[in-house]
Length: 639
Image (cartoon, rainbow, N blue to C red):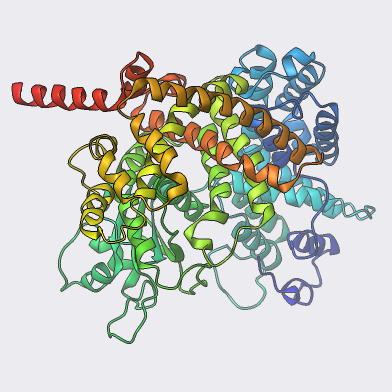
């Protein structure tokens, strides 16, 4: 917020009291903030703990509960008299339920998020939500304003008592869907100059003091306008997916911006884009070969009828969900958000003309951009439709956010920067957190989910080794380039004519004949043979099962060492990174699939593939897939 000091210091009428000047200057947030958290902030933090915090170091640890209690007591202690009276009932209920939870036995405090269904937990959660709702009500905001006025009028106060009251009022306005910064500016205008928030006169007006305060009190408690909100986001990056699903549309800026002019070709949402670009400042694209576009593609996000405050962040979160899922699943580069435009009821209300700099990564990474494009086209429509149906569930959103954080240091965007030991070490606790969130989403105990995911390791490890064996054979062909190229085309094609594992089964002899890594030949022969031989497959599965048990125990030791500062060498940390990534990636992918399909998360996490089931019953992989293709062909011919 920008508030010019001379506007509130030198232009006062001689009749204006000093406390009025104090009231206006208390709305300036440039002079530091209080260490006391606004009550809305700490209650929201408690609610996050109630819904998301897990593990023995969360609620069971007395120090954490004491810390939350201290923050709550401090925030409640600085409440003004008017607000304290108004919220007395929901505040007392919240305090009572928190105290009951705080005094609960360890058997309650150690319950994981997904299993917190007893009254002790649900009552505290409900009371926190009720208190937050009460703090955002019209009368609560008016009460905070009255407290701020009363604090300014009390000239005996010397402890900057106004500050936590002003900061709480600021947070209350934000929670109501308003722009608190602009509302504070409006209040300065009303109180200091006696003019309305939409008036722009020069100089002092002669509005009586009582009337100014009454207008300010009404203005501060006016609800945010609910209207159609559309956000247009302009991205840099050679990513041009074709996607229009749910509330989201990806559009090629190089084609759409020129055609947005009235004489251009018609397309969906043309009028909206023209409303934004007709001034020539937003979403500029190159017209000549030697020019560079400000943006390469646009994403339109329809937020429906809502409030404008925070609309950009909400739109970016929706697009980031699509990007995060797509890039996590398939790789690629992350497009760079450069500009945006906001439409309220079809009219431009805000925009960003200034370009922000690009992120670290290869310059003009066309291959990475192509990977991203195909990933968005593959995964984006289903995610966009699911987001239009319902918001991403809280636990699943938290898991995706953590997984994105863990993935980022190893992504193409950071290709010019070697991952540090800290980056690699960070994977272990972050992956653990992903699984914890997914367990809560599926209402499973975290240890139960870790066991379920660990059961997937042996077969998944075998599949990975089969792929690795084939790729080793295709590394170099020597003088047999023609055969190598033939097998490589089938192996790497995006449109295979048969399951990849049948290539390994049917052409294992030819693959081995291409192998030039002599030290790996015996291992490759064994792996390829296991595709056709269940006995060899079973022997490998037993080995991978034992390996998984060792890795899980090591992963837990490493996680606890990293979390609590116990000794652990980096070599040990690095050795469990792959296993940790398998656990979190498997959990997140299965949970996302259940969200998109609308199935029960616990059922999706417990379900096994038909291939796995058949092989557990004694069938080899090659026979299973041949039978599967035969049955599929028979079914299609019959229909």
